[in-house]
Length: 311
Image (cartoon, rainbow, N blue to C red; front, side):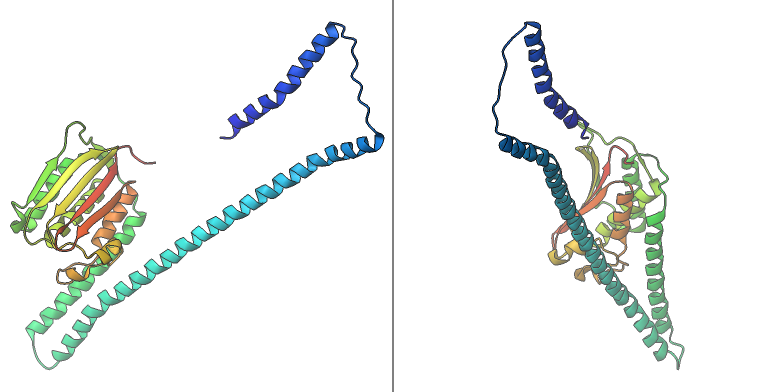
């Protein structure tokens, strides 16, 4: 990166020497008899010579000190950035543990209370409650394990047509939730640029799309759900929009954290792992996920895949 500036500096340094040498040579060849005489007192000459000799190491010393200061400032900046990142990671870890404690405490409390109440009889409703809460714990553990596995799972890429993935996800949703039939529509933009087939991990991409689409159906009991596919500035965009309950603004920055669930979504079953899975899938593909939401109006989730594969 620094070779071109070094070459230019070398050329500029050599120009005066070459020019003066050429002039001196022409003067010698022409027999120029003129003599340049400089009268300089010896003390002044000694002083000037000392200054010239000292200037070289002094300039090197000043340049070294400048580099040392710059390196020190750079190291301080890196250390501050690392400290900020570590502090943020600790804060996220504390939030995760607090959510995990909350998610585990409620079903465990319900199981213990129900088991105590059912000790003296054969209360089938009580044991159904135990089974329901145990199932909730099992689902939570399963989703946490799936998230951990995704972090180290290598991508198994193949040529994927995103329009086909979206059609299959919509069909699967309608099969699971017949009430969603007629509410979900797919819009694909093909002009002037269509989304080409991409090298993706089909299973992971399907997992991400299924999670986003299922959330849209869960949190919007009625109203349309629009799924859109388009190309934009070198990215393939999948947008899932709903007219559901939306997310409170104060909780929106945390929705992609593990076990994060908005306060207005506590009545809907879920582990709070879905969007974390989506985030991991998108990151593994060199893409990202974002969300816009307004409480009481709905949400728009956008998945972005690079059209050129990342290395």
